[in-house]
Length: 86
Image 1: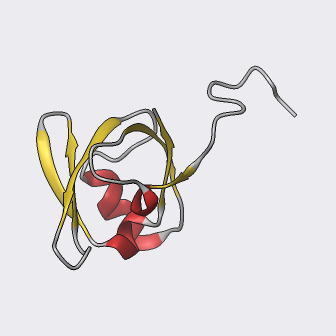
Image 2: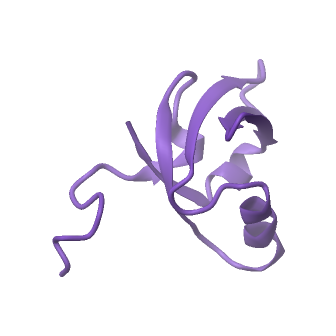
């Protein structure tokens, strides 16, 4: 096990589990195919910093601020994004 890896020991979770106002860093995008490619094209790539801005009244979609842009993601899509919250 490589204990010198950046972020070792921090709690990791998926983007859909974060609450409004939480900040974090993208660790990786799980899965494959078109969905993974689309998520990464939006800028959710390893190391990207983000803030969860808000969620729709029924909880779906969620809005994330990333590099000065607002992104809207379904919770099912956000579940593929592994993050380290700050």
